[in-house]
Image 1 (cartoon, rainbow, N blue to C red):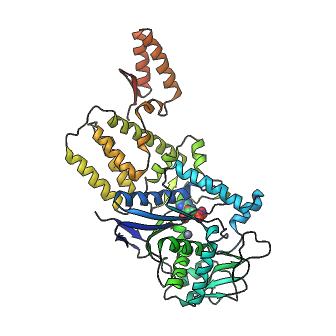
Image 2: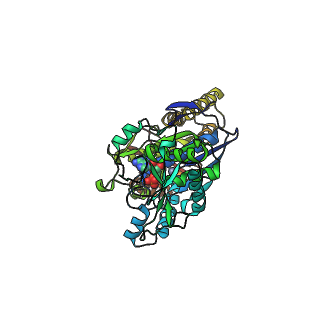
Image 3: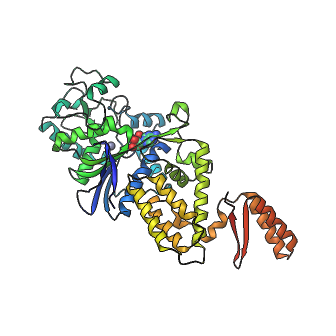
Amino acid sequence: MNITFYNTLSRKKENFIPIDRDEVRIYSCGPTVYNYAHIGNFRTYIFMDTLRRVLKYNGYKLKHVMNITDVGHLESDADEGEDKMIKAAKKENKDPYEIARFYEKAFFKDLEKLNIDVPDIIARATEHIPDMIEYVKEIIKNGYGYETSKGIYFDISKLDKYPVLSNNSLDEQIAGARVEVDSEKRNPYDFAIWIKASDNHIMKWNSPWGLSYPGWHLECSTMGQKYLGNQFDIHTGGIDHIPTHHENEIAQSKGRTGKIPARYWLHCEFLQVDGGKMSKSLGNVYTITDLEEIGVEPLAYKMFCFTAHYRTKLNFTFESIKSAQKSLQRLREGYLKHLESNNNIVSSNEKIKEYRFKFLKAINDDMNMPVAMSVLWDIIKEKEKSKIFAELILEFDQVLGLDLKKIKKQEKNNLNIPKEIEELIEQREKARKEKNWIVSDKIREEIKEKGYIIKDTKQGFELERIEK
Ligand code: AMP
Ligand code: ZN
């Protein structure tokens, strides 16, 4: 079955055809490691992970690179203002490298909690400075770069078209954005590829242009092409990357090779909080740890992300995330019912085929996860319980990454059972040991009233939540 992706470059859904038949080459813009990544950032990494999983489910091998921005970047996307890394270093009174490694580690820990597969190649900007210098030299040699007292700038007037990704024309873009007034620049929208460092700038390197450091866009151009070649298949990021970061990456690449570096540009829409922007000043920037502290598992957040298509805005509220936690619980319990049934067959093999077809159709339709999840729920809710359905759920979980294979029988009794129910179970067990059947039956009824059914088995007992 064909895979289709919405390509920001063509502004339409396209059939996905990789450059090499078997291996898909992907570049993902990674984190700037000067602070803990927030749940909005992780929406974009969950989308990146789903993309990986969908391609793998379709039989492709991957070569996937993600960068770690550990050289700044500057406050605005246009590489102006203060360096984010250095600002954090000053604030925390630490070396910028210490800051970068600390938050990088925290980032990977969160990825693990979210069961996000780490891309094959993790490229730190600070470890690719010589490659970046070579890249700049080539841009200059090809006539697209020029030196000013501030650094090396990219001359956008040399391009056949700019911008190519964003809907805006350059006029609209110029009107809508703040551009630094700089009389040395040839065109107002020329941007810094390489920046000369002031005396008190901490992260700087020797270069043909003196002590200096790379612009943010340069690192992605350089590292993407170093590992994936001058043209690769897919480039991912959040929608905020479209107008400047990715636009300028494309410009640089055209300046060096004449080509747009990736064929498909995929962008994840923003997560909003309470219908608005997440921002420090509003005090609504949440991390994965914040969610855990209120009893929400990281995987419940992943499931929450699947409630919306990646190209639509998703609104985070505490009510909705708590309901995602309950859904995750129900999903696990439903999966266990299939797994634990004594039935090894299904009455209709056609059903399995149909479910597989619907699931594949959904994920291959530009990663339509809400539809894919509805197929999963249909299997969970099947009246007929069967181990075959459990296997199918696990197969789909290769794409969902909800780690269902870790849910084992004996864990069922630990699935977020309220304390009062646990206490009632204990009292009932005691009554049963004493062969006090009247008390044990009474407690069973009490447990039922509180929403759980307790069933006695040879091994002990099983507890099920009554589905509403
Ligand atoms: P940064 O570390 O700031 O470069 O951001 C890391 C990734 O998170 C980038 O791909 C951003 O586009 C993305 N991102 C930032 N804020 C949000 C948000 N609220 N929702 C979804 N993605 C976001
Ligand atoms: Zn990037």
